Length: 114
Image (tube, rainbow, N blue to C red; front, side, top):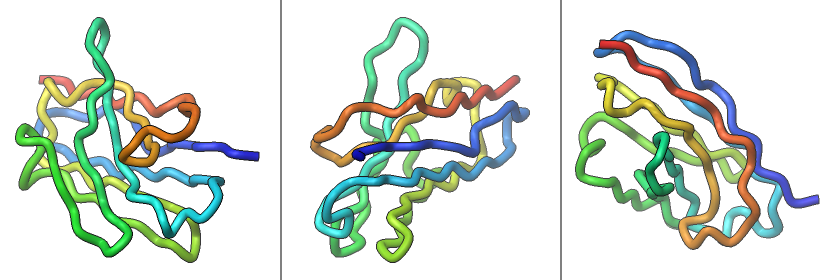
């Protein structure tokens, strides 16, 4: 059964860190570029970080230098290390392929207080 399960969110003060994790039960995980997305209330769901099959990474400008994506193909997991968090990072965070191939999971809430 195809499933994306995110975890690791929480409530932190500005400047803090969180590490999100996603377990992706999808076919041929290692052949997909995997991404982390976020959606703030009333906003669209945007891709913030993507890691290719070869391990190359790309980031949305607002998180560059603060967020770091990595993957473990043996465990079918993709993680997002978030440092120097800002209130504007508050959102529900989701994982999916970078092409949004699969149904979304429930996401994990990240709330950053000022």
